[in-house]
Amino acid sequence: MKDYLQINKKAYNTLAQEFYDKDDVRDPPSKAISNYFVGHLKKRFHNPFILELGPGTGHIAKFMTNSGCNVDAIEFSDKMAEICRKNSPKTNLIFGDFLDYDFQDKKYSGILAVAFIHLFNSEDVKLVMKKVHGLLDKRGLALISTTLNDKVEEGYFVKENFSGEVKRFRRRYTPSEIENLINDTNFDIVESNISEDSESREKKWMNYLIEKVKL
Image (cartoon, rainbow, N blue to C red; front, side, top):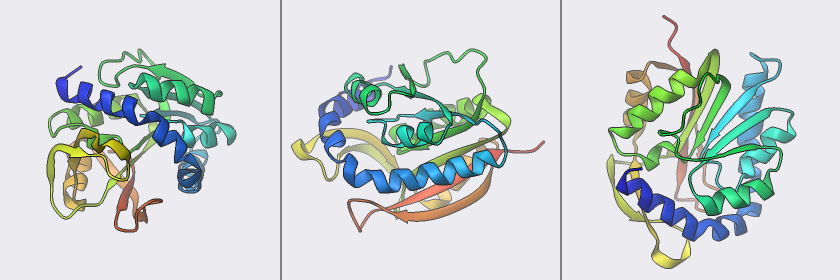
């Protein structure tokens, strides 16, 4: 695992309990995301098989499993993984790093990546998207969500709305930057929208429902 990802792992281990303490605030938007994504998947698949990238405390995973979907989730923070197992016991939790983990021949109806792609630098995020592409079923969908920003930048920033001045690496995207990333990695945008953050009115999220380019 690269150094900047090791720093992120340490940051999420440090903040895991505080994330869990915020679950009541995060649950309504998490349920909305689950309903939206699962609703689209069930139009294409009778029994959707979902992979969540970076489930954290499992607050979205629990809603997806409760909707009747089979859910795998991969988490690289051991403290987050411990909470996720308790919070969403029906989820098949994989402890590991997404880019390093061998999924073998698995294919998924849907891949959910909320607050995930912005944890990778400009080079590695293309590898993330390429791997997502390879793991999706031919009619599968991915939901990519990251914060809306006025300019593109990446570096080490203090995690907002959390105690302790904990820094992590992240990349900040504008709409044009993330749309270029989606198009350049052979995906089409099915739908997109902007939603408000559950904790801060100043923060907004860009949500992209995407599918593989039809060749």
